Image (cartoon, rainbow, N blue to C red; front, side):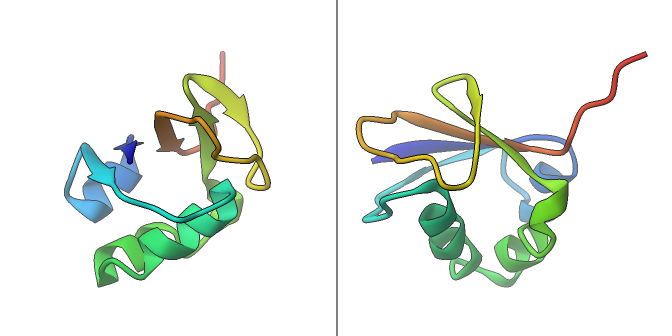
Length: 82
């Protein structure tokens, strides 16, 4: 089980702040594929992965990062500073 958190427009498109997911995914990319299959809203939210960042257990990572031992995955748009 992994807790999946959504922020900003991802949360708006999916309609949920978080969900607990039972997954067989080995990597973040695999998890995204599973999430896309959950609903049309999930598919829309993850349709442009160039606009999505991910953190595993609160550490920014890449889509090919392994999920073994991970308790939380957070998806959010790129941040800009000023």
